[in-house]
Length: 326
Length: 263
Image (cartoon, rainbow over all chains, first blue to last red; front, side, top):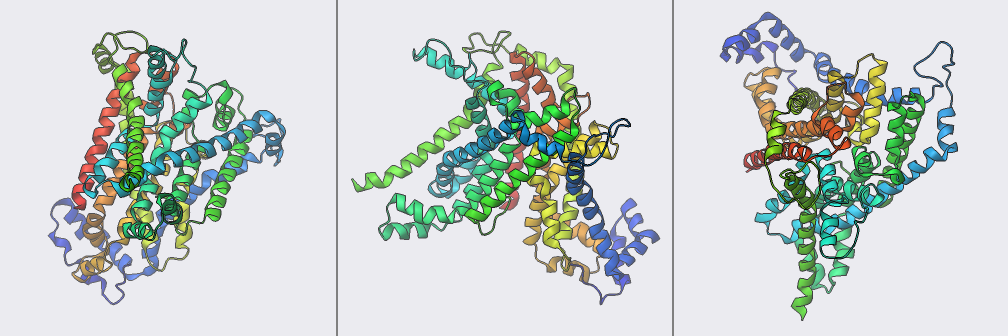
């Protein structure tokens, strides 16, 4: 990047006096000149300056917490207490598989996330296609913006707004009763329905953006050529559009799935006793009066590994060539 | 007949777009409408309309404190995430660095770890290194969450930067630091701006990390959450509407700015 081995360091400082004020004084100071001289002369110093902070940050805060979580998940007791053993054990993992109270919500969580992902894909795909291919290019940004604005509202406010719609005296029930379809309100809130409705509402954007950018890249002449060669709408979709938007489908589904697995505020507000999913179970282990960190850490590890492997396998099987996060 | 069949998919797609748009906007519109209801409870139909809930919210000291607290955390998060994100992006984009792909993958790690796990692992981490729960812990967790997105945005921009721009500046006599300050940073500005807006909005929005790492002082989402859980009144709607309008204004401004700078 900074290949200046042929230049003497002193040449590099000729523009510095142009700066006035304290910046100029700092730039003309001996310390600054000395530091910059080191930077220009030695590739090793340059590399250390460039790599030091990022590597320490990544090691400490991106990897460190997960390693520490893995560590605690193997402990019999945490924090270590004098009268109890603090040996390494697999008991916390065994507990997960032996107790239905933990195992069932976990399975429920995975199925829930999968259902949410597939529903979001089915709902959002035609919308993304419409914006990317049918809306006139000059109106495209506006059409996209209309869909983006609700997402600036934030997670909690959007979750709360779903309550306005689905509550017993919410808009939907009142409307249905007004038209005489029902006598008493349908209890929609605090069920799996309200939870899925809310989570799809929260995560649709993560599907929309990757799909939109993938579909937009498909050359329109290709679709027209397929039509000229006699392919009907369904065949065009199945043989041309779908394979070419695979990258968008893979990254959209991965994003939605990973977020849906770990969704936390929505189940607290929209879920009920019959729709307890795994995040709530984990949270009680950390927040309840009983401090059960090792169990909680073990369960978190299980959830992390399983959700990442699921997504990894999905990417492998569907095989997006260049899978990117954004 | 033929044109009818040709137009059918187009009409259906258009309908799907508009149904989806209504689906996105309707709950929020209902929520805003409810903030004008002249009664102590949330229920449709609205009946009498009033502005008194807004008066109440504006005088609510708790709301004001929580807003300022959230904004402070968001600004601190933005500054630290931008500095670290740019630094990592520069490292990854530099040539002749061994293991670049691994560094990039690890830099993106917090973006693929589910939010809850992220929050829990940070909670465990700060206990291990003796950082108390509270403001600093929240900022740290928000920064960890925001860094990958800044890295990706800055990297995308860096890749489109002509390599000889910095070389030219160096040939003209700028030292590496001045070249970085006066050539690289201005070129990165659109990506930096986008990244900063992203940091502010995600930090102000964040619930799960604050839930696990926060102290006794509530941030805005924590306050709204507590109010929703403990008895609902249209006051929450007024509060949420104010937050919604402000964040949307920030988002629209950012969108306007990035589009203008692109063209």
